[in-house]
Length: 341
Ligand code: SF4
Image (tube, rainbow, N blue to C red; front, side):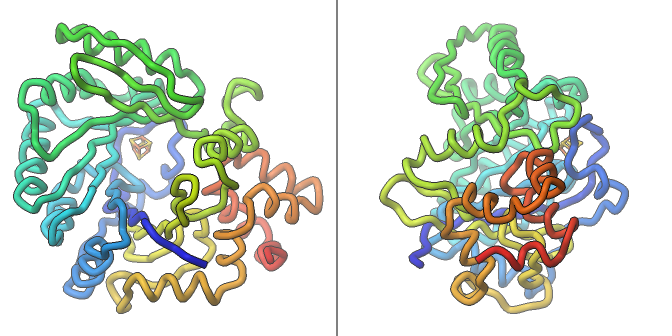
């Protein structure tokens, strides 16, 4: 299997006091573990993020990464140049502090020859909890300072797209910026303002127990939307466009444990204890039947193979997100994943 254009995803902390209603990681927020990089951890992360086959390095958390800015800076400083970073956050800081953060990140990435996209959560769940109104303020910062190394985008859970659209338009208008919305597809809008385009990505809701069926994108609809975009079957792994091989989706947790995103039933190594590099992970995909199948067989076909009884069907339907299902199935029945072939 050819693998290229990988995504490295680093969760730097479990700390978060925001308390969004739908939070998928609320059980972690009492543990509050941070990714404290030792010498080996720095060496491993440096090797991974600087590898020429890596297309993007995303930093976020099982909590709010703005709580641990120093760890993000530590990672940024490991760059040897040419890296596309992304920072996913609620943006909850006081605006003055948030602007200081943007300035500092811009300074580091610019001096290293990198870029960083700041992706702010923008849905009714987050907005209800975040009082500092970071969205309009971030766009104002972008227009006024034109930071060389930074771009901005937004992400939302798809239950109420109109909320996100209207909220962003209002927030920009509050600073005197007119804007328009352009729908790219069911998973993406563009917010157009002045000479700039800000992407809005819509994600599928994990375990949508509080939302009525029909009011959210179900698993089949989400996969179909993804497939329509990439013009090929959806598998796990980092999806690249039509005609391109997919890459690996490597996730590093605050504990240092490493997984393939969506296959968190299989602990691959620990960034703080084990020597790892891109080839180490490629070999696992080559040698491990379950991972190999999940990276190569259409996801809905795999789900079909597992759909052996009503309780499994119900679990898949209730989990509703391809990147959470394998973990849930493994917790339900450790032997079930043996059927993946
Ligand atoms: S900001 Fe993120 S980590 Fe914090 S409660 Fe909300 S969803 Fe969970």
